[in-house]
Length: 176
Image (cartoon, rainbow, N blue to C red; front, top):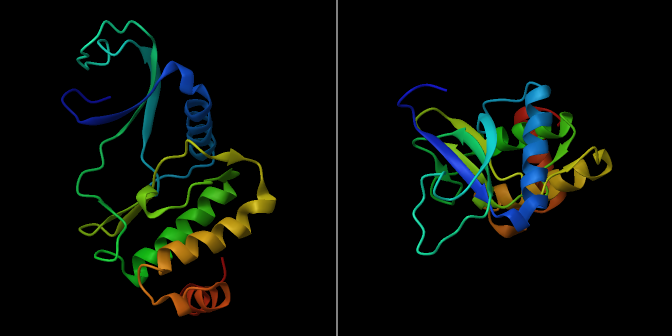
């Protein structure tokens, strides 16, 4: 890690081992499959007290907290009706297809877990704490849900149902 660089640390309480392990495992799958750019780079993980993470507490907390050390995502914005474009929407769906090819089902496809970077046109999927691995049978359903969530920010509701969304996507990008 670079001296002086900014990083993000996502911290999990000791009792939240399942979300931590799901997220850590998902990032390991994604890294092994060569998926990058559409997810934050994860540098590693550690177990420390809050004080050792550099956080002040109002109480004597000596519990261990699990953390993922990730890339700081400067200039990103949560997906919204104000920043969505057709290109961003299609890029998010292509990115989700890459995530699925790596054997990861995101399982939390809400706008709060999608970022767009207007300056660079980068899109990023966040928060894999609900992810499941090797559940290929569910990928198509997740793409359908994600398409509704993403395109729902662009088009009126009557155009965001399955067939209409996919025909638009295929028209612009080819099949998933």
